[in-house]
Image (cartoon, rainbow, N blue to C red):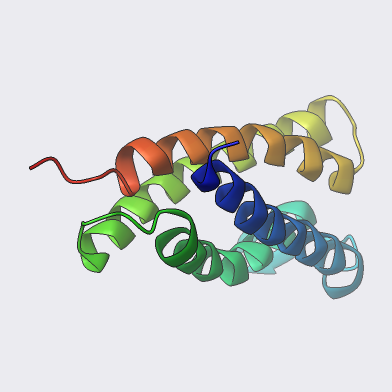
Length: 139
């Protein structure tokens, strides 16, 4: 296994476990499985839990990717964080779509739905980060 793939798996694995743990804790204990209203907007408990875990894992994921996984990148940090944010927007969208699909339409429990969703999102994220965000700058 290439070193970069191993580092991505290790760092991504840590961040993924943190994400799923925060999601589950938020869903079951912070929001107590109840939907919330924020400034007149109805937010389902599983979406609020996802957003809560995202706030923590987004910066951790960026710094692990930049300084541990894709160390050989030559792009400036500001440009990378912009690209990283674009990929994360794609990941947010995928999370939203898959969570809604699995929970609302397939009637899965939220934590298993989050785990399966994460598999799809991790594949998308790795490919995008490797070939877009942290791609070596062409000379």
